[in-house]
Length: 204
Length: 204
Image (cartoon, rainbow over all chains, first blue to last red; front, side):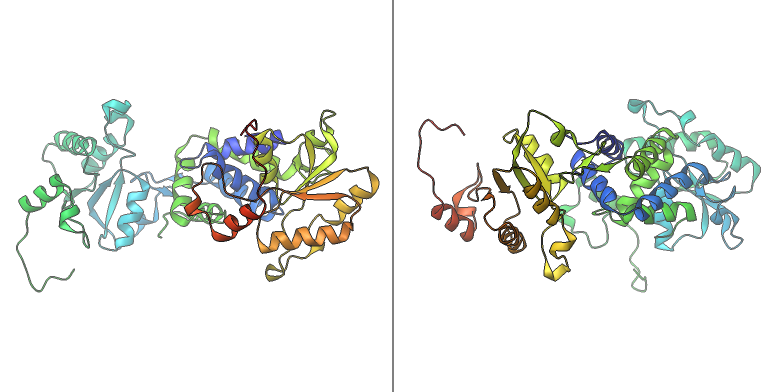
């Protein structure tokens, strides 16, 4: 790509350093910003600066927050005795959108992955153990991706906690609206293994 | 989408105001920036600020530039007597990448489109006429999209110039590597109409 301006080239480089933004998309975004008369650029700069300077991480659950304790951990209506353990902030948002969970969260910041050099000390695992020590907890719900790394992480946490708290994992099976023939064998096999009793008054 | 932080929400809003970035993509980009320890955010802020404060528009051809006259217009090796008229900066980059053109450019900034309320006065058409008056020009190559709006723009420019300079349009026809059966009728019809004599020494 030939650029008529170094400024333009640097902006495209900075933009294409973001995930899933290639050089062509970056160029389109940068030209859009360059064509725009100030307002959009200023909003974007202010927003990124706020991410830099104002965004905090909740001391309890490690969720992004505007305050030292996030609004979920702070909310008196939430059940503090049930902690849902997730990988990332995105997972918290996904679960919150279901409106099916009224406990609190703990964000690990990833899963144990020896191949990528991510060990337990790189994650918020020990702070989870501290929470269990300092507070009465009834249940840990492990809402972790059903991958080898995810299962390893769940195993590691369960060993570390050593039956101090009951641990559950989210149900794995065939998706609602999914067709059986397209489900992979492992999922389908597990969903038969973990079958639940039919209840015709059950709501979906 | 439920956000744990206003800062995060504002950043997602600012990011999703960019073209082809939806709310979900914006969230991924923002969380990537938030997770990143400073460096990427700073580079992006600096780059957008440079777009705001340092990027200039070439006085002659309206290309983005670091200087008042862009490096194409400034280059003594380029033929200043042939002007290629294009819609946008992106088109200049596309033509430069072909390395088939050694003249200079003129960027209109769009095409005449009554439906979108874009008239000749919104484009850099009169500055093109000024260039033709002030300087000896041999040819205008109209490298404008083959649309109704594009054709209207070419017609308007040709009327305004009134045969003062010879005008050509870029060839329209079947793409290299394209298959005839998939070419649309208009293109195929025109490409038969504008057939060129076969020359077996012609390089592709």
